[in-house]
Length: 74
Image (tube, rainbow, N blue to C red; front, top):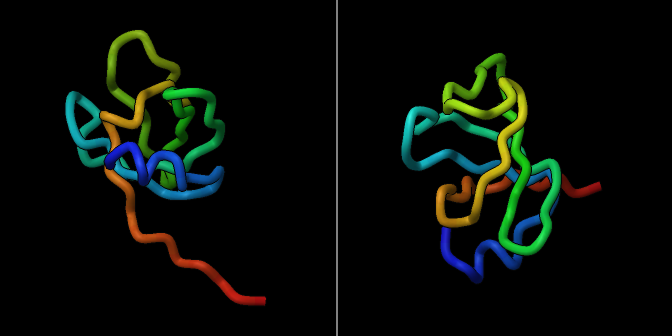
């Protein structure tokens, strides 16, 4: 993810962790403030990184890659 993608990110968008113990876990954005993002796994995965809650992880845009969002028209 680059800075421009981060600026266009919205709560509910899906991302994937791109490094560390949690690499490959698909997560959903729950909260965004400045350069920090609170994410939660979309399935029953738990984050393995030391010092994090098992269901939520505070991370930065540099540690995530964006996943193409499926938008529904209503």
